[in-house]
Amino acid sequence: MNATLITELLMTVTSMPMKAYFDPWAIPPGVWVIFGVIGLPVYTAFLGWFLGKPRDLKTLALGSTLFLLFVSALWGGLFVTTMNIRLLFF
Image (cartoon, rainbow, N blue to C red; front, side):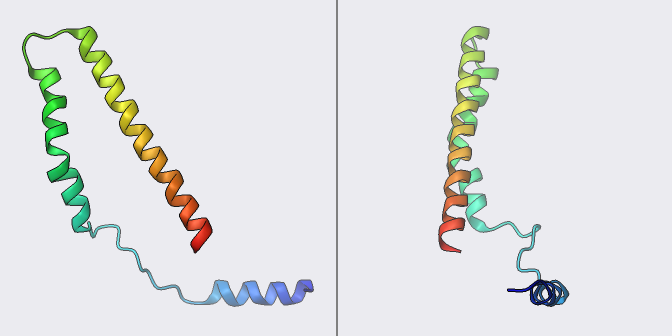
């Protein structure tokens, strides 16, 4: 392909009106289910570490660190999986 054809193609693509398919303010119901209903026991256990008696700061720090590492690993793995699916199928 020559440079003028590529330039014309890029100009055509960039000048086309784009319709927004994603509304960032619309929260899907699945998000409410995952973070509200399924996450409720996890939130309760996590708050129990801070509000419960007796408090042991070493156990609290260890549990909180492991919890945050576990959640980060899950979110990171899901992100990588999502990007792989996006690259392979779309």
